[in-house]
Image (cartoon, rainbow, N blue to C red; front, side, top):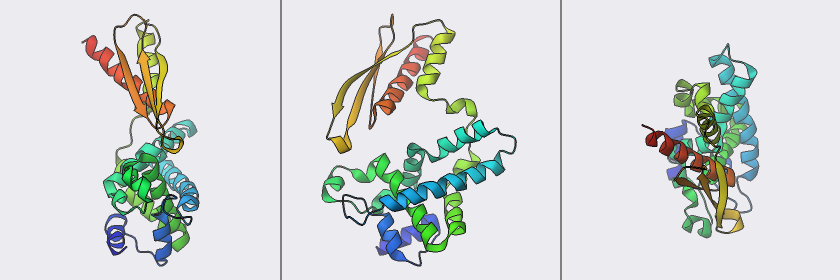
Length: 227
């Protein structure tokens, strides 16, 4: 725990008055009944508000819809997991033996939930202003590198629009395989386009994410083919 406390002080620049909250925020349900699920629920709400407030300030002329898109990008699972990896959070997670062997410390859902749980724990420990300070510190680089709204369209939408502009057939997606047990399933999806001799494959924790990955690969291949 001393190592985790040093990490917290260095990376999040925060010191808990109630260290039990921090310990709980790091604990996955596979390790204990007293885990981080409730803290994650609270942290999710705190994060949404803090990011909304910051975007409201950073983008004074943005519409409600545009602010919502930017917020969704910043608080989505993939972004949170990336932040957690950058911070080295996975090294301090408390996981059950099965989850540890399965590499749970690298799993997006576990990393993102744990980071939100920390936000919830900070909120309970020292209040909203403390949580705001931690969140804005962690997100500082993301705030300074906000993407253009046109870049926030998902890969499936981008691929469809690209094909429509060229009057080409729309893509089809086929679920090929579901791997693993119920709580750790991986979905394998094929993307193909009528008349094209190529297909791409995506694999992820949900069918939707797998389709997005397959679409992203297809778009890249089609563009390279027409260079």
